[in-house]
Figure 1 (cartoon, rainbow, N blue to C red):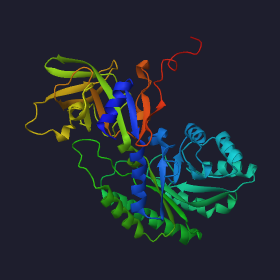
Figure 2: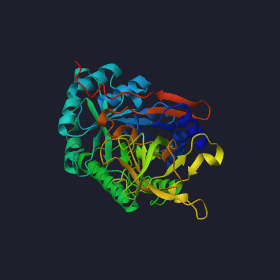
Figure 3: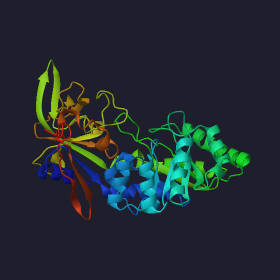
Figure 4: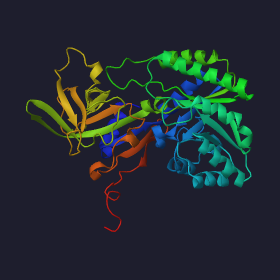
Length: 411
């Protein structure tokens, strides 16, 4: 997607807005699949961005769903139950009963505790169904169960005849930059699988693992060679003694690159010797993992409305500014919220920013659309667009008012 396309969105529609490049998204999934090989399937963790589940239908292998709301979104999008891994630490009986009764026990369920397993067994028994489940291994937090309890669950499997324990699930966090940490986790899981076989007689058939690959969000982050990373990881998986099926659960690593957040400069001023641009968006819409009070500079381009071609790009990304071009100043980019915390980025190098210029924040495909404090101060939710080369720009959601949520129903 070119900056001309993004400029066209800014001129035709109001900002702030998200634009998600569906072509780029699907191509990234195909790239991951190619390097991982046929043994490995790819699961999209839809919490990263639930809007993306429909355009990747037919490209992705399965979806991780962690709440009744996410499940409802999948239903409305026509996601087959066979492609859903129903996860989450709090599964209510009524939600499990609904899924089992509506879809005849299809799909896969995760087990986060002995209580979880008991509830799944009781609900499946009511429907006379046998359901598939993965036991989540804790990485030292509130999720899953520890290794000794994992062994106990498999040892007691005959007490739960309506739940087929097919394998393990493991996820320990995001933005992992050190490969030795991932190697240690793979070794841990390999050893646990061997222990389960030795102590319970169960041969694990399926492993779902979230590698938590990092995304370089900021200009200070070194760009990574994704193809080299995936080849290394495929080789690491190939060295496991476990020979069953592997699913990689990914959210940020799949979704981040396809997203662009557009926000217009609506005011500029100098206060106490500091340059400030006020944007019509803010931190309620934009969330970069690892950002601290706007201290890190993300990849952002400034586009000037009314101009075309190269002139539309008033400022290339901060890491691409070269000597010899027009002198740039540093500007603090702040949003429209009435809080001093609404600092999107500090000291951004910009060439003569003007009111009406549009800031394009890149790699915003994951989490920004859902993790921002979007209800704060009752400002409208941004518009959302998809882009494909074949269809062009498509409106997925118009601007939505939040004030109707932040008031009593009788008012």
